[in-house]
Length: 297
Image (cartoon, rainbow, N blue to C red; front, side, top):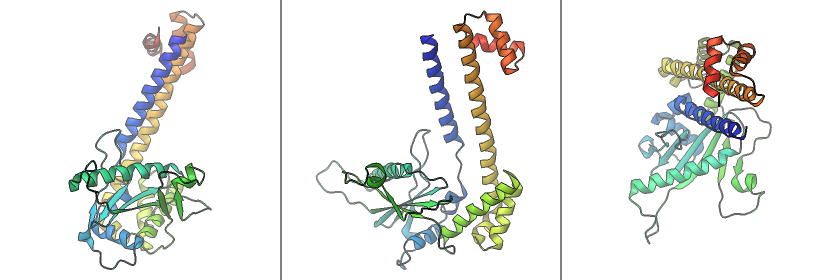
C-alpha cells in the first residue's frame, strides 16, 4: 500500500501541475490591461498618481509590463517607465492578500533585470549602475473596512522589524471617482452588481457597459471598444466555465483512482472492483473496467 500512496501523491502532483498550467494558459487580457495598453489612458493613470507633474506627456511613457512568454514565467498586470526617472508597477486586485507584496518584489527584480539588459549596464562591473526610482501600487477593487494607505514587507512578514530588504506598496481604492483609477474601480463594482443579477451572461456585461456609459464611467473607452470589451469578458466567462469543469474532472479522476486502490487494499477481485465503480460513480461496465485497468497495480 506504501507504493500506492506514493503513486497517489505523484498523481496529485501531476494534477496540480496540470491545473496550474491550465490556469496560466487561459489567462487573457483583461479590461485593465487593455485600457492601459493605450498611451492616452496610461498618461491619465500617471497623472492620477502624480498630479503635480504637468510636464510629462504620452511620449515620455513606455510600457514595460512583463510578458507571460513561458508557462511558469513571471507576468504582472502593468509596468511602465517614465523617461529615465521612474518605474511604476501597478496591480489590480479584487481579493485581499499580502502575498501581493512578494509578487511585487519579484516583478520589480525582473523589471530591473530587463532594464539593465536594455541599457547594456553591467551589474557585475565596477561602475555603479543607474536605476529609475521604483513605485509600486495596487488598485484594490474588493470590499474591505480597513483600508491602509500602504502595506510593507517588514510589517506584514517580519513583525515590523528592520531587515535587509523592504518593499512598500501603496494601496489605491478609487476614492477620487473622477480620475481613471476611480472610474476603473467603479466599473468593476458595477460589473459585480450586474453579475449578481444576471449571472455570467452577455446581459450582465452589456448592462455594465450601458450603466457605466450613462454614469460617464470610462465612457470614451467603452464607446470606442465596446465590442472588444464584450468579447474579452465573454472569453473570460467561457474560460472560467472550462476551468471549473476541468477541476471537477480532475477531482473525479482522483476519487476513482483512490477507489481502485482501496479495492486492492481490501483484496477485492478485479470484477468486484469494477462493480464497485459502477455502483459508486454511475459508470457503465465498460467505463468502470477501463478505469480499474488504468489504476490496477
